[in-house]
Amino acid sequence: MNWFARNNTKKGLTVTEIALFAMLGSLMFAAQVVMEVLPNIHLSGMFVILYTVLFRYKALIPIYLYVFLIGVRWGFGISWIPYLYLWLILWALVMLVPKRTPRRLKMVLFPLIGGTFGLCFGTLYAPAQALLFHLSFEQTLLWIAAGFPWDVVHACGNVAFCTLVVPLSEALRRVLKKTKVL
Picture 1 (cartoon, one colour):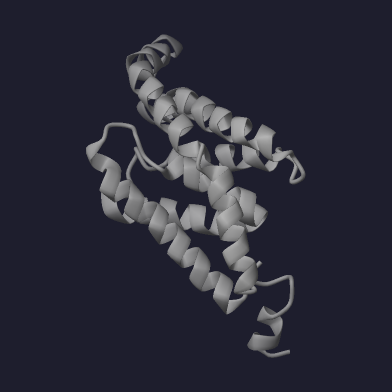
Picture 2: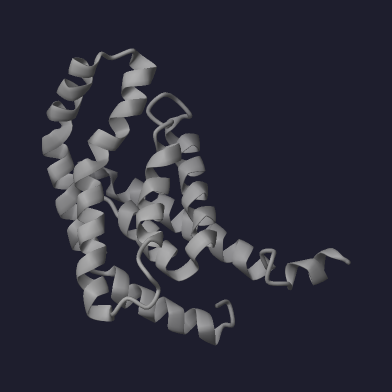
């Protein structure tokens, strides 16, 4: 079986999907760079939720392309390591939402998930900090407390941007179906 035949099966990625996921991961990264002037306010959480709603397991491709690009831009240092698991947590939370959830519930649920994730971001980031910097439990709690005001800002931004997930997913689903990507 040649490469083209294998890529046209349901098991592999098509060339179109590879190009689409590259663009989506790059879009997520570009949005991060553009919005870095605002402290802890970005579109990353909204994109993770949006991509997961649309592509389910395949959403991990643009998400981890974004993580890779973050490492390329700012370095694959200690602060980058938590990104390897943080976005996976948000992806997993969205995967728990059934596909057939009513639209009205999704309109509330996705901002709630995004806001909660933003509020918990520092706490979820903390285990890596504790392990990498040999922090005691008390030091880790102090680190979380010091960053909590920024987590509140992060949560507010996520709630606002995640209100766009349902309308964007519906619009993108229509476009992707017309172009036979979905």
